[in-house]
Length: 487
Image (spheres, rainbow, N blue to C red):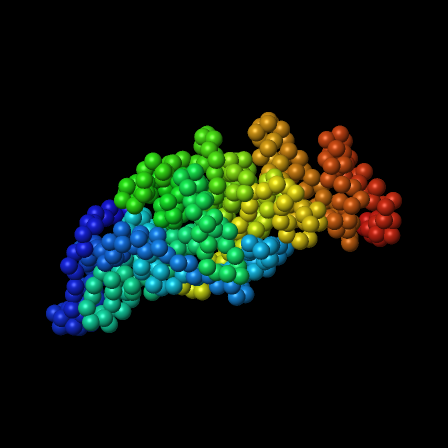
């Protein structure tokens, strides 16, 4: 990895495209010259901080930011629900009615406010690949990838840090960030008891709630969007950074310049290892989509974190879940089911759409901790759509995880028995034409099969089940037996 050193000062960098072409004899040679300079980092990466306004100016705009709420119906992106639960994407307003709410970010929002994140974290963010693509830094230093960027830059009259960075963003997809303006907008909705009928933010309850005791807990601090929003609204903040320790210097500098170290703090550890007992008013959780074993991450990390933080939350506190689904990693519906059915007093307040420059609304799911008798429950009732029934693969992982905490040998035996059971079911179905797993489980439940396996062994158990099925569905098996005899 190339170590980049840069100054927060703005170097006076400007190249005339025409002069550069004349100097090198042709546009092709001028492009090659720029590509070679970028490869060796003689032409350093065009950080936004080199041409962005002073961070304190951007922060003042965030403090006075007026959210842009859209209450028209919208299509929800990045939600690949297996059973289409928790739809349509409505949010419960102050008057008890559900209406759509979408928070929009404009290009000016980024330039005037949200670029604040990049002043502190861009040197880390450009090293992170987006999906299966190269990171921005690797694109910059790769001659093959950098050539079209430089060729397009020569179309500008002058090549500057801003034109280089703008062109790079146009041609290369960057990792998505949760925007500070999104976080501020959500907090204003929650703290002011926002009404979907009147989009003006009331101040009475806001002023009452925005006191030092109003504490925001951020389970995944990311690139500091919720931290910036907390400082802008003068709230206490605790954020956790488990993996990317290279972000810590940025957090420290951000808090020293814009916040108060005694009111906002970053803990470089997993939330599950946090042992302080503090009252929490609002929790933000952005799911980690990077683990290869995504289901294992849900069961071993995300669900236990939800259970722990729910105990810490004050009554009438809010949980904000930002968990955009991808083609290969879909967990939002299952996580909402888990919250609804396993966290006491979880009230479904709905969904707030968050859209960026691509105008695609992604969901922020809102849950409130309240008395069980006052819960809002998505229809139909949970008894008709239980978590374990709809997501049996997570059920097995959860059971195995709990067994592992109790007895490792018992957990190993449980996994071994599940595999034997799967093999037994497959062999029985293979021997009985027309028999499905659902029919077999209706006749002989899993628990009975496991008992028979443990008591009589695999072969004898298989023979016993075939006999049971022969009495249960004689026409189904007679053909099979007849053909077996004929063979």
